[in-house]
Length: 226
Image 1 (tube, rainbow, N blue to C red):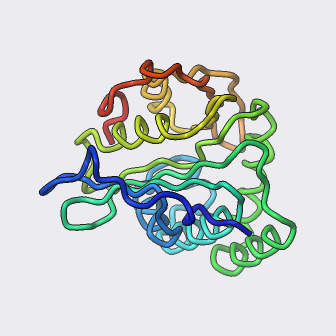
Image 2: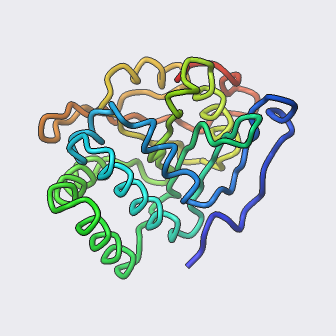
């Protein structure tokens, strides 16, 4: 098994400096999970899966990111503030990467124990619908979120611009969102809608961004503001 933690360490070249965010392109899953659990409090798909429970949502992100880290080439990105507090995180899956059978069984057991059968069944239902349309050769942006206390400052836009710039993605980047407000924001980063699907009560939009030529990506701070 390979973990993204073997990749490059913190990058302070652009964001570093007194009181400014610091990027880490190889954070451990345990640092990213609490940020995403806080960021996804009102996200429709996460609320549907976890039932709106803070405890279940934290356990779900913990189990999910722990399993995701077993994928060879898996990527995580983290922004911390000037005091070293994590404020934003993103998680990406390499093209065609899937957990091993053992990793899937471990994830199911952790999710069942920590989150209950409803969360397990609904996660599998969402994944079955969302992953069916993943373009060949594309990376998947699984999660990107900003801790509520840091929202509204362009943090999400900086993180998204950075990960799009550093991820080698000749097949592009794929994502799904159940938050309709995010569609326009992702469009500003070059994503286009591939299809719309219904999963339970959710209206899910599948989007894809082709690999951008050098120098043609969005400027940091564009688009996502939370």
